Image (cartoon, rainbow, N blue to C red; front, top):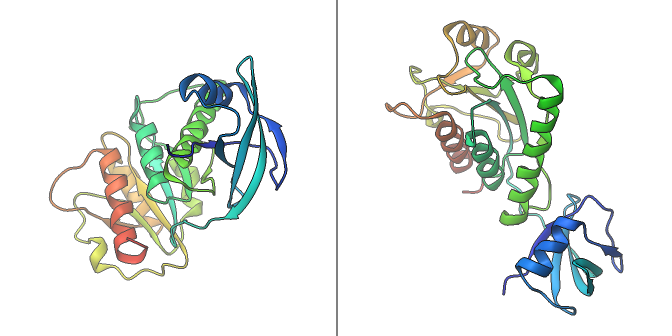
Length: 242
């Protein structure tokens, strides 16, 4: 049986003893039906894998003790920052989940003209908390020990100040593809992707006027979640560890 990986926000070190939270305890005791003496893997984003032995299971509360700590670096050599136009339903979650698997290190949700998600400040906060859980769960699944950064949702106009010399935005009418671009893979590679319906003509003018380079992914029109993940895959193939 594969050793389950569990994210925790707690500080960890060799011999740490702790009780897992309710969600993790339920998963370990009821879903996986593990027993005392068996091992799980913990991580908290500090780059280490902490192997812990189950000490007790009482009323669905699982207690463990860390018995081994191993530094594991399986991060992409690229520092990709995905500025993603917010999409409806589970499309945004899919982009975040698969982006984590593909090695994206930073995510910024973009509020654009064609963004179909309209929320007040309180609901935006709840949405960000949910997206953070999606990112942490994706790290559990794919083996990453560093948690990608998730920044607050921001309007496109306000985000443009963050553009750098290695910023690319997806545009189906661009004459440029990634294979024609020479990029400094040591710098932050920014990828800007519009929501469903893409960037408006005015938004395209804004990003181009700020020096963001338009790039296309072939002659077919891609959905927003497909464009982001395909572009990240291409960047990894050209400059990363694919």
